[in-house]
Length: 136
Image (cartoon, rainbow, N blue to C red; front, side, top):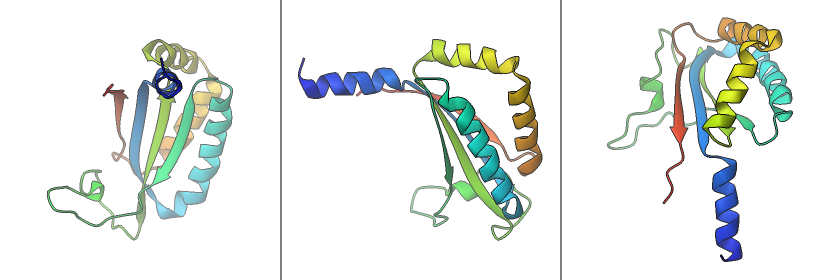
């Protein structure tokens, strides 16, 4: 096995499951969400082969044959009042994800952070999905 293919294999093994959460949030809650993201990140940092990343939608332009995300994430407010956030959690594999979720279910701190997060986002706007790596 070449060094490059060995690096690619390790990269694939280190991140085969991606859990994404996308939601709208009032712009007035931006700083509170940033602080909450820092708390989540600090908690996740202790989980070894897992990463958590946050992104904010920056482009609302339509491109031919594609629907812009601003039209798919539910909202009753204007773009001037809200922003779209994406949280991405990257797990080594399904077993790793299941173990972490089970641990979270009994962690009161996770429950507190989750409730705080839900109180800061636009009700009914959260969507999520689990993605498995496609090996090409």
